[in-house]
Image 1: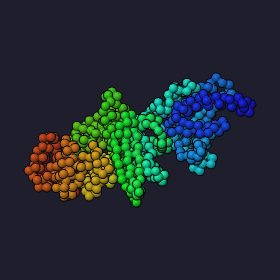
Image 2: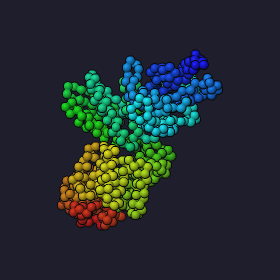
Image 3: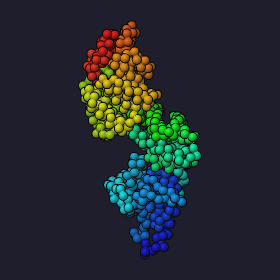
Image 4: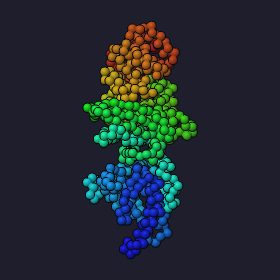
Length: 575
């Protein structure tokens, strides 16, 4: 800069005014301060920050294209996502220091981002990332994982005209949605007028983000991005567009004396519709227990509601416009019917999803479970083939993602169904629950493994846990009710099993297994005529059923209660 210091400063000002500031406005960023030939800026989200950085570097490449090398102005960009300290309009703290050090690691005209930024934007922008490893940065105590960013100019057409302010504003610009359901938890409002309650409101929202992030089919925005909208006077649609999500969770906390009240709602941002809302009351005396209970209740309510909404959305799409995830969503409720037709339709949809996305772990896992389920239900067209294909698909699912709770659940299910490997199944399902402890499906699977193994008291506790997590689940509720009927019946309590069997039949009137539980419960309760009538209806509905074949293939442990269950079916008239 020594040869033409004044000229260089003039060019810096020109680039800042004509290129950087318009792009900054477009992506909703703000200049915190100028630092000689550099600038410190902040954005509401990592996606906005990286989008602005790419467009700016591309605009600078265009501007320098016809310039002599000694007069070209080239910038480096470092991006980090982290907490900062705000004081008199300036930003301080570790988050700022990491970004500054990463800028020094970037090549001229390039961008380097931290691992936190990479995790927040991966799959949401047209860019590729080259891992640089864990870098030791000056005055930063810990190693920082870093990535070099590259992009194709054809994916960023607006960069070529970035020298003039774009007509759109941050409110107008829509961020592309990720390839699975996306959600952000906004900071809960503190309605108490007591600043000390902010910690509680933030703790609830942070724990909710952590819990929902364990739901493998959800894309959940990181805390630092969603909390950037604290106090923002924007409507939900605008916030969702800025964050690139389909759903928002918002809420408030109010304190009155020693009492706390929390309200929360789940919103579909495009329509503004409230999909779900609830109010919770507690006391400051058990504030941490209250917080844990609320987070568990919120997750168990939000996850099935989102799933049901996404299934309905998939069903509205034209048949020629179904991607792998939509096919998976359409298969889910068919699988949950556990009926012969429903499982066959689920297999067809899941196989189509796998053809579109061969590494789709959850589709592979459910395709495996469906095939293993048919022999256990007694309606497999080829038992050996079903079990063989189930094992192969399950291995593929775990190869794709060894920590995916759905894949682990499928592996547990198959271990119990195909080999009666109860301990292996428990170990696998416990690994799934370690990842997602609020999964109603995983708890239901664990309960069934316990019931098959003859651990009926444990099974009943686990079925109750699953039902408490999602009492209105439209798919798995009947599976748990049937499980309670089976566990009670095989533990010598058939009269208590009967109402559970009837409840399950109300939800799934065409599910063969529930009809078996009803017949056995009636017979073992001494209601023999009703049992015979139920058995006759069973034979009419399922004429191809073979009791002997089912008993040989069912994953039962041969307990006295289970043997009596099978005998009661034969005595009532099943063959």
